[in-house]
Image (tube, rainbow over all chains, first blue to last red; front, side, top):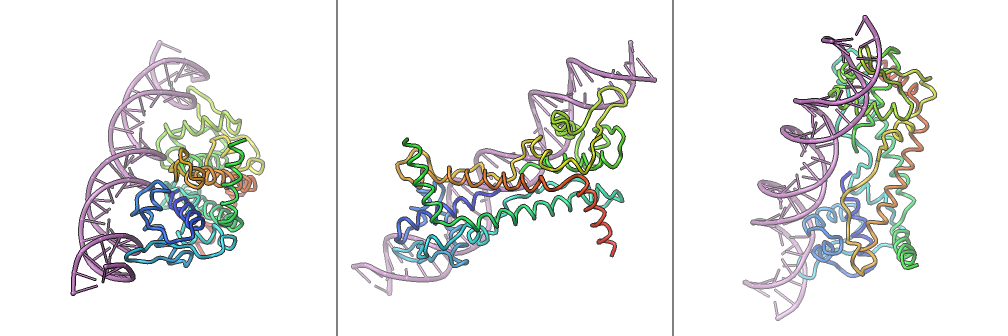
Length: 143
Length: 143
DNA sequence: ATAAACTGAAACTATATCAATTACAGATCA
DNA sequence: TGATCTGTAATTGATATAGTTTCAGTTTAT
């Protein structure tokens, strides 16, 4: 899958910690990617109302919501994330053979079902959960 | 994700319908890929005991189990399928920043969790279910 | 006013992943 | 004993994804 989801979650967690307006350059530096990609991803989060943006001097990105009320499903829907998919299709729809002509459709149904399953799981994880997990992991690594 | 899973499921469904020994060439023709790839995938299913193979003249692949007792989880485990993953990692583990150094680990945990979720779902689908779904889809498309 | 610092968006390039191809050793059986 | 398979590996080619560059539009400080 594409890693836009990771960029978005990382970005929001960072914004939530800093609480001020952050430029795409600073975000890109923390995420370890380039500003253009950060802007592309964050623009989608803005359209979904998850963050706010400000153009011009001193502009950037800002997260003003309660971190316990924003879950990862809202983020993956804002980005239209596909967790499970396969561009390659087995068989050939234009043959009389039921299996050769139908298998790709059946597999697509399965992938679609798995995607919805993943999205429902993402609904159970909030930005706050991530933040707490980061803290826990850091403590564990010190032990 | 890789499409080996689709090749494997398609192959087993086809073997289950034909009931006789089928060569990699015939399987490849139905799946619409090349014999070498079919052999690579089917060899793993053989190691897992899902199908049997026969080398030499008149050799090939054979599925002798009850289709209602082989589920897709056993196939994805035989192939070590990873449904959800991302090779790209955000941040950098070698920085003091808790977020930049910890986010990739947290995302990997999430992906791992989603993978296990998908595998459990695959446990609920058998080869027989796929066969029945193919029949149902064909009827629907005629209506 | 206007110059500086930012986002938004698109085009283009580089790279990594995955499937196709080719080749050949080893097994099996007529 | 030679024809026909599988098993496996190396190489090539196609495609998907991240990086780079560029520029128009917005906002604000001075």
